[in-house]
Structure formats: structure tokens, C-alpha cells
Length: 321
Length: 254
Ligand SMILES: Nc1ncnc2c1ncn2[C@@H]1O[C@H](COP(=O)(O)OP(=O)(O)OP(=O)(O)O)[C@@H](O)[C@H]1O
Ligand SMILES: [Mg+2]
Image (cartoon, rainbow over all chains, first blue to last red; front, side, top):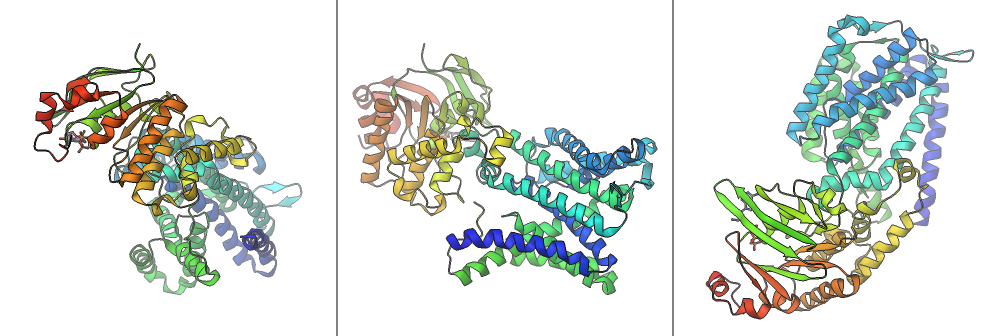
């Protein structure tokens, strides 16, 4: 018990230290990959929040896109600083999330899955159809990379540190939500919806809250992505990208905040290693997905916690609590 | 005016009237029994009153306000709570966490206070949850996961979760089903203390006739969705229609 109280903060400090030093020893190409990885960490952890209530949405990358488009418009038109575009993009994505989820909470399970896809495609259609202001099918280019004083975020290294700080803050807040009564309520209403309502938990309201919080942080990820790529394209937020998100979270697991991160890191490594086998990638990823669904439905985190408990001789499981 | 009142309460399922024109009137401080053979419509009646099912027609008034058409969470907030015939619980959480999570109606902190722990009410909720658990003699299992409890303890946890909402009226759906005689005695004793010491109004659905007869002062009998009769345990036990309704059913052990 006391040992764990120390090992966990030490582990976190060690991880942050590694993340701070890592890019100094890497080539620019690798730093670009780390930047995308950190952005995707925010994305995948934000996707888990509504997933804990049982809501698996197909609209999540579209909400990320809302953040990206907001950033594109705000920084191109109003030349807003990156310190404003990131939070404002989160707010706009959150608002769009709230609008989408209002009809969605009337559905559950497969109905929710399909309806969320339809609503997401509807938003994407707006981007494609309205050349003004969204740039139509080709999207928008020329989005400023952002800067801080004299430091230009066009350089990968400074931007990496900026993204690292934003990611750590986002993760901290999402971690607090997960551990709070609100996060536990999300899981509780998924485990027994009838009981949750009976003891006064307004289930649709909480599902909407989870979805909106997820959209908010997806918006942050989208904003960071838009500043990095300097461009947004409706294809960046289509179902193909959504499938990757689902693969990450299925491979990692959803019981804790660490599962999605494990899945993302593992599959990013696989993705990079499989560059020479380009045409085999869909098969590789599809196979991985099926393997995990069949043989490891709890994901990598489940495996990790089981191994850890075997070593430390503890009995309890991964601890959704 | 009665605390809980139903007027012409009716529920139709496809090709079946599960609850038919039921008028109930339950006063503050009562322990009301509701009995009836298998499939009589007792659980459906609870589902209607608690808002889990939409009424087909009729109305429900609780504490002076119309509650029919409201969702269960709103009705729970108004002080009307029910337990389930099945063992309902939040399985991956401990007994204590179950009861704390069920104190939802009492939470005052806003979103940010909750997340960053700046609200000061968590400790108060924990204390109150412990009190409820102690009252139901579940304190030995406070830190056990709900899913690992014995059947009897899971049913008691169901009551604890309901009490956590600080209800004025609690509806218990076969609370002692499947319990051994010792557990049954303990729970019926708690039910009486709920009324006597916690000033709660209790509505008790029960299959086990002896439990109802020993616990309730007044009983409503339901048969084929209709209110067959109401009366004291003595009146009910000696009523021809009741005996007939139960005749040939396993529950006939008056
Ligand atoms: N959701 C539903 N859809 C269709 N029919 C239902 C539904 N719920 C209950 N019924 C039917 O309504 C009738 C009343 O069921 P209910 O569960 O209320 O009885 P009960 O008195 O609680 O019985 P028991 O003593 O076995 O618990 C039964 O015939 C049942 O099959
Ligand atoms: Mg029943």
C-alpha cells in the first residue's frame, strides 16, 4: 500500500523526464512522430471518456476536426495567438459535441454507433460543401504554426515542448475526472443503467456530459494538429482515421486511463515498423484488432495489470475503481 | 392528503393489461404490504410509480406533486425510491463506493469542485454512507466488491443504495427473496426500524406471506393487475377472494 503510494508518483516523474529528454537525442523526423503521438494521446484518452459510459461514437475524429477547423479560421482570419486558438477550439468542439449528443442520448448501443456516424458525416459534409469558409473538399492551407515570443513553432523541438505541456495538463484534468465521483458515475451508469436512474443519476445528462468533455479534449488535439500540419483537410477526419482510433483503444483497453495510451503507443510502433510492408498494413491492423477482440478483450492494460499483480502477489484486477 | 396516491393507474403491454385501474393511497408513516400471485403485476406497479415504465393511463401523485411522466432520477430526487427484484448493484465497486455513488441526489459540489476536490462534502457523504451500512449490519463487508458478496448481502446492499438517496418513501421489491430465515428476520427488523426510527414510509412487495403479515399493518392484494382487496393482515388472510387467488400457487402457506 505505502509502496504503491511512492511508486506511482515516481513513475510519473520518470515518464515526464524521459519525455523531456527524448527529443534532444532524436532526429527531426522522430520529433515529428513524437508530436503526433502526443496529440493522439490526448485524442485517444478523450475518446475513452464517453466510452466509459458505454457510448462508442464514430464521430470523435470529426469533433477533433471541429477543433482543427476552428483553429484554422481563428488563426488565419484573426491572427489569434496559439494560446487562444487552442482553448477556443476546445470550447467550440465541446459545443458541437453537446449539439450532436443531444439527439444521440436517445439512442444506445448499435443505434448510437450508427447515429453518431451519420451526425459526424453531416458535419464533415458541411466542411466539404461550404467552400466558404471551410475550403471545400480540399480544406484549408496556410495555417500559422504559432509562436511564443521569438520562438517559432515551425521548428519541431519548441513545438514538441508546447504540445507536451498541453498534453500533460489535458491528461491531468482527464485523470482527475476519471478518479472523481463524476468519472465513477460514468462507469456506474454503464454497469447498471436502471439502478443508476433509480438512485437519482440522470443518465442522459451524464452521458451528454461525458460526450461533451470528450469533444472538448478532442478539440484540443485537433487544434494542435492544425497548427502542426499548417493545413486541414476533411479527409483527415474521416472514417479511416476513426478506425485507427478504435484499433488503438481496443488494443489498449478502456478500464483505466492508461489502456488507450498503451494501445496507441504499441500500434504507433507497429505502424512505424511496418512502413516497408505498406500494402500489408490493413491486413496487419485488421488481424491485430481481431486478435485482441477474441483473445484479449481487456486489452494490453489488462495483460499488464495481470502480470504486475502476479509479480507483486496482489489478487485484485486492473482496478476500474 | 396521502403521501403516495395512484388514480386509475393502468399499464398495457402488447395483448396484456399488467396493471389495471389501480387506486392506491399510502399515508406517511405506513408500512404497506402489496401481495399477489406470480405475474400479478406487483413489479410493474413499482416500475410505473418509480418512472421506469411509462404509464398507459392514470396518474401518480407523490408528496403533493404529480410524478407520472417524470424520469426515475427526478422521482428519486423528489424522495421516492425503489429497490429491484433482481440483485441490482454497481458490481465493480465496493459496498462503500456503491452507497456513496448512490448519494447522487444529495451532492452539492459543482463540476470543478468535484474534479479538483475543493468541495468539502465528500467526507460527509462517506460518513453518512457508513452510517447506512452500519444500520443494515453490512459494515463487515464495507470494502468488499459488490459482485463478491453473498446473495443475501447483495440484496441488503440494494436497500443500502436506495437509502443513500435519503428517501421519504422506499418501495422494496421482494427484499428477502432467497434469504435464509436469520437474514429474513434481520431485514424485516430493519424495515420496521426504518419506519420507527428513520420516519420513513415503506411499501413492501413480498411473496413470502408470513413476512408481509408480520411486518405490515395494512395490505393491498393485487391479482391479474387489479386491486383485489385491501385490509389488515387478518382481514386479508381470511378473505375468500384472496384464498382463491392464491389457491394452487406455491405461496399458499398462510
Ligand atoms: N416489459 C414487459 N413487457 C411485456 N410484458 C411484461 C413486461 N413486464 C412484465 N410483463 C408481464 O406483466 C405481468 C406482470 O408482471 P410483474 O413482473 O409485474 O408481476 P409480479 O407480480 O411482479 O410477479 P412476481 O411475483 O413473479 O415478481 C406478467 O404477465 C409479465 O409477463
Ligand atoms: Mg415481481
